[in-house]
View 1 (cartoon, rainbow, N blue to C red):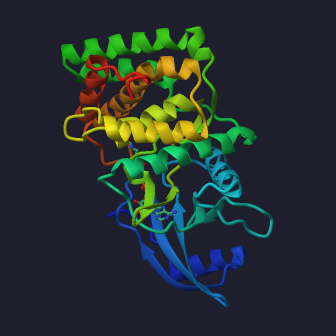
View 2 (cartoon, rainbow, N blue to C red):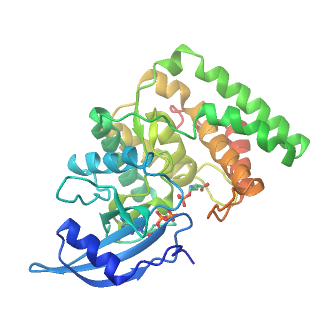
Length: 323
Ligand SMILES: Nc1ncnc2c1ncn2[C@@H]1O[C@H](COP(=O)(O)OP(=O)(O)O)[C@@H](O)[C@H]1O
Ligand SMILES: N[C@@H](CCOP(=O)(O)O)C(=O)O
């Protein structure tokens, strides 16, 4: 169940009026979300019917949301297939529905590709690079709130819940990432707005054609290489074992680099960023699992998955040259 707040037909109709989008034809709760209330909204106007997604934000606040929503609008305006938040007559894209901050975006066609092949990876890789380039002139700034500072804050909080062996790995990896972040190669990495959570379940395909990226609510300004590494840790591994999948990884990185070639510093730091990407999600999953926040809606994912991915990345470093 994932409709945490019931939206009435009258509330939805009032929003559509404010957005000048036509008449409500259907309002259907989306069951699969775990964090927000989502509805599919079908709208009828003189041109026919169109589908939107209405999201009521249950955790993020009205202060935090503009960075994400205006980033989506900016990317959509630059031709990147991402949900485009609908504006009212004052140009406002953050609305209030049932007393909660809310947005209405266009529905992306298709569904998730949970068993991607090299061609899916190549499409996501090329679009990721296009998205990074399109984000260069986005004016708002918000750091990646799940970046290095948060890892340093959160590792001590989760240490009491893990074994001595896991604690040693967490401490050692955090020390390594602090060291990497202090190097001149790291300082030379290009950066900008990144998605930071572009897993298979945040991308849509219609058949074999990529139709868009969504769920930008972990986005922030970070290195582009970190975003690439987060993707490779999901799109280009064998999920049960965490083992690197060379063919999918090569397809992903070659397609990315065909749009935006990787710099020397990025090539040098790819193995370290793959470890960083695994560490980030191991920490957040441990945190969600052992310290469920009060009133949190999260249904925690298995932390041991990213422990396995991290151990794989440490044991078998993947160099850019080896791809
Ligand atoms: N713009 C969109 N276009 C198509 N489907 C969407 C869109 N936004 C959300 N969905 C659907 O709603 C589901 C839940 O959205 P998600 O952002 O994962 O919710 P939550 O943040 O609550 O986890 C997604 O798995 C997807 O099927
Ligand atoms: N992708 C993250 C969890 C983020 O949750 P989402 O459903 O909002 O994408 C993970 O796998 O830990």
